[in-house]
Length: 414
Image (cartoon, rainbow, N blue to C red):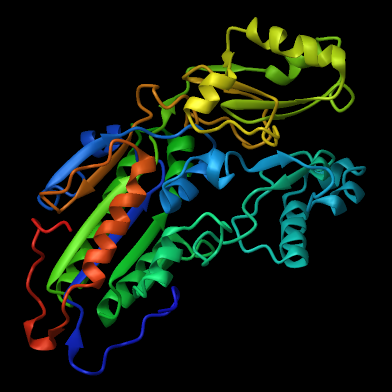
């Protein structure tokens, strides 16, 4: 079944089981544990280890069960002046007022998307327009499209290959619109699996923090919508298996560091000796001259604001790239520190993600109504669980409509 349309069953026969997978980006274990969240519905809840990388790395990991070194999504931008999709940006970069105009930037994104047929979550964030022609954007395709990651098979590819009827949220729609669409698909009763990706939580947490009323309200809204979707499914399926999970938490910010100004104090020149992308919690460097190549790692290692990640550490976290597409040097901020100014945020966040996976507060979380489910230890292990559950739901026997409406068997998990 097409991922954007569920067909109403008219033969009086409904699915026996359905799996509802809800991916709550940035809703970390700390919030799941501290705030009221699916109380009375959850049979299990547990923390999970996140992965290293930008927010764009987590959805591919969830959908494939692989780490960035395999699915090739580690950060939004990678150094590639030859293949760049932003070549037209050089014509705008010479007029400062255009560089600062959000309308110009939005129109530029629209033009690039249309010219290259990009269906992924394209954004240029706060990147200076004059730098964009040096980089390419990693997510060119909607990750919920079949074949989105080429030879690396995704959960959507599994659904297609196994002939599992499914419905997925659409990245171009809001969280509310996707909730309504999935509710309708479950009301029709024609899908065996539904996947809802909530992407708006991280913005609220970054702007207001984990202890704010806005964050509590957001968690309460997610709780309400999940319960509503679950009840709709229970009226149309005999068994409803619910799995709600996240990719990481966020850490409160207590220090800022102007890495850009510090680099300008060195004898090396940006664009001549090196190229860098400064993100809130990570700076990535490509070295252009032998002298800079010999000195940059030493300069960064002397700064107290962060750590240069070794090849061994990057390999351990599944984030080492032989072609250095995401940087020859990866400089990771200390927990609670953000680099500002940076090329991603317009405003200074009060909480951030993207620190080392072992940082307190960074743990992801999982909640499910399946009492016998063994929770994954890490976000990378979620995929195998989703595949197993979806396959079991799809191969269960269909039942007459009169038998539908019973609550789910929370002990079933395979």
